[in-house]
Length: 424
Image 1 (cartoon, rainbow, N blue to C red):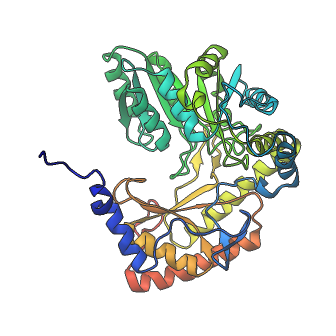
Image 2: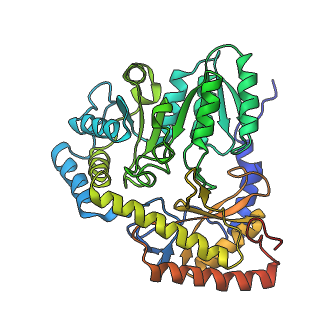
Image 3: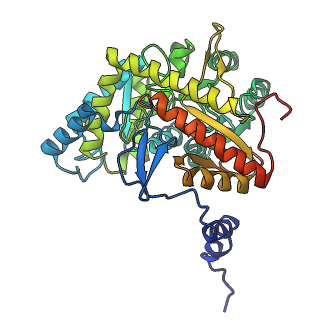
């Protein structure tokens, strides 16, 4: 009989599985922790009060009465689900209203709503691109962008994070590949928290005849006078061909959108498999997202954008004052700087990051941990993030907790990386 390999063997011997088991033995697993209250500046997690510095609820709208009413009204009218795809029985008037609002907000001709943000990237890239095309991506791009490229079978050329010289080199190489060229970058990078240099990226894309797509998942509802994202903030909206965004950050719901020219969006409506063969988003998700969009587009929205950015700058400066290595705020073309709500703290070592997370968690502060392969080797970090609804007293308490934990941690485990550019 032929010898066969058990396809389940990797589930028992994979390096990450072995690390998970070791972390469980010392209760240092930073993932799958049980949340027992709404996502707010202070939450209940596993029976304890903890300051939440690990949520993408940037505007604090997940408990806003108008957003909750949008969800409740949608449930009352349409029930708990539509039990079908958008193509068949799953399109509600709420979907159409949401798509119209998003296209208007983003300043595009049209928009298409997906059930999740990951599906939006998969659906757009896996449909528009083909085996003869080339996609150029930043190494810090969202995983769903890379997955969408794999699905498309297009040729992928990656460049090191924000290295414009390497981007140009990839564009030069792509000229000889044949087929179309698409550059895809995050507007705000999900781990680093920095803003992509979109004017320069648009310049290079145009010089080499490439289309440009920007993932605004962490920029929508945060950056720009309208809150329309990094493309608006940097004045390149009319030079970006496709915009992607999610509803699971500032919009306090779940879902994703691709916005762009009508002909491209219509093509996705009839050809995008993750759109055609996935059940439509539940009514509550669509109703709450629509309510959040309308808040963002009001005067109150602009006040929330300013508040979350102010809190981001405050937390970034506070953690940096402790001697921690945070990513510096991004310098803008007009000479100003912006700190986004994503405030990472570089730790470098995977195990140190897990142990530091545990110490913070036990001291009452919840943050996220990013380990390889989510970040480059030696790039382990604690990903903190703020909301517009954090008050200064809560942020001060969190910073003080970081200070105490850092002192105790370094006494036992040695120094953590110091601020960028320092010798610490």
